[in-house]
Length: 265
Image 1 (tube, helix red, strand yellow):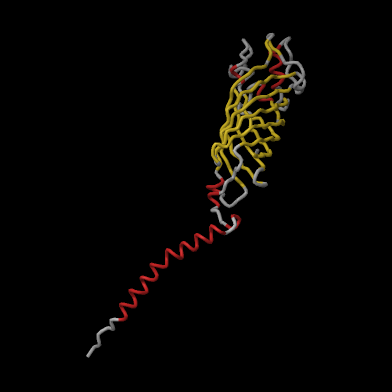
Image 2 (cartoon, one colour; image 1 turned 45 degrees about the horizontal axis):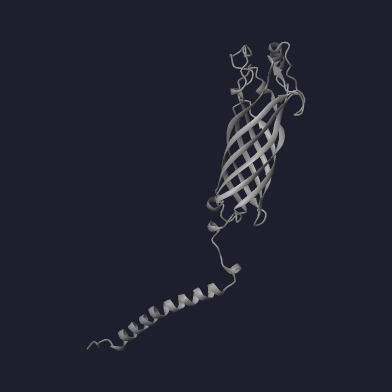
């Protein structure tokens, strides 16, 4: 005859299960107590929750390389199409609204030289200038201005375990500019008794990355496309290209490549 199961086996199982369920909260409480008592340095923070900007405020200074963009077609005689690569400096004050979002307000001191690398283009312009100041390779387009940047940092999402903190940036520009005869401190070039100078708004957009040096210092590398509405300021009567009726002075396009240091304060 088949024997019946011993009544002590189910009872032992129930007792064992009760002990496990009863001791689980105790074990969990013990682990929390140990974690709370451990030094802060031993607590592991998920990389996705790292604080990249512990300081709410920061200052920055950068070296800038301006690379002109010549987007006009061939056979278009345009002063802006003669600009050559040059350098400058920028500085700004930053406020981190969030760890991943910053507003920065600053200024820049920069500009472009001119280059007569396109055969006949500078001469074609000067033929129309007549008795006015000629355009020469010694001319300098001064671009001094202010800017407001909005920066969204992506490091905690795309490079959580890295010192690099990539970002997207949009920029609102306001430039005080002038075309000088020989360097930024020389006289301004004139045509029809009107100085080639003005104050205009612009905008920009770009990408970049920070590189963490320590808790308060970061290197900042940026590539930003800029567009300034300089062409809205100067429109001379009769000074237009014989090829397409565009004015000899138009808007200014450039790449802004900069490397700087950001310090939290």
